[in-house]
Length: 189
Image 1: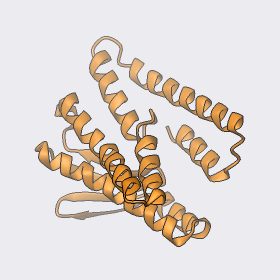
Image 2: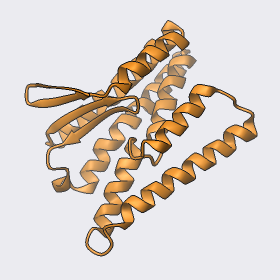
Image 3: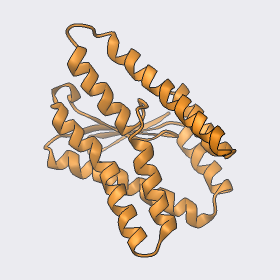
Image 4: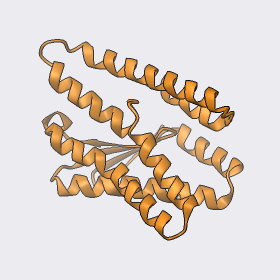
């Protein structure tokens, strides 16, 4: 992992990020890669704007194959509702972009944004949906049963993976990159 600091914000780049980008540049057409990268930049920019609007301060930005993860200073002090708005900003921006692209006759760009938005709502620890679920569970069980939130999140990850695997098998989808990402998300949790 390479770490550096710019204007007080720590950046950490995991070795998996450039490896995934290199792999995608080989298997995806240039336009598809560009659409994917632009959708991800829109997603993370929306998070940054929501963080600024909420008066929070990002402390660390970690880039890995699972995506970009922003960590706030004193997240424990951030109310769940404020954190929910920050986490929802990325998928909401992608959903809005998908609608705009679809209405503009650009279905490939719409699909890139829609898939990124939906993927980020899944309950994996590395996604916005998983982060929000974990935060809500920690707030609910912090005093009474602190061991419960990680167990519930792990169970949700396994159930999501099982449901997706069943769907992919039933639909006859044999896309290796999709299966690989599903397994990566499961085992990185």
